[in-house]
Image (cartoon, rainbow, N blue to C red; front, side, top):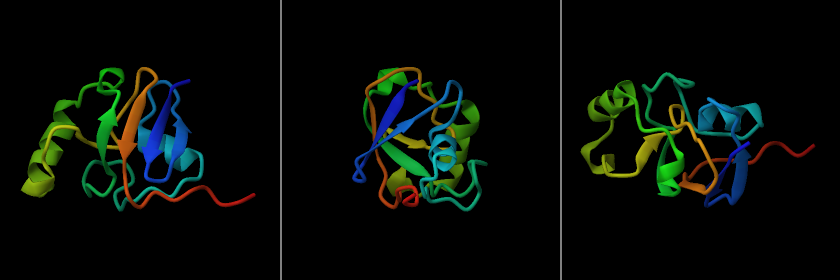
Length: 106
């Protein structure tokens, strides 16, 4: 099962096959910013892919269009993806996302 390293938190999140990064984080109890819960509307879940771009599925037309319409122009740059749409195919993916919180202590 691939893992995605999330900075600055320093967390490694295991992602199931076909699962989006944000869905994996929520499944594991992480607090990941959102208001639309995976609908690609709010843009709050966006990440910057720092490494491992060759191990992620390219953005689907729906994600590209949502970012074009809803992201401020200053946030539209290479490597910016929506975590609710980002799917991984292998190891080595590192993303930067401020505001992610760890799962509650058990």
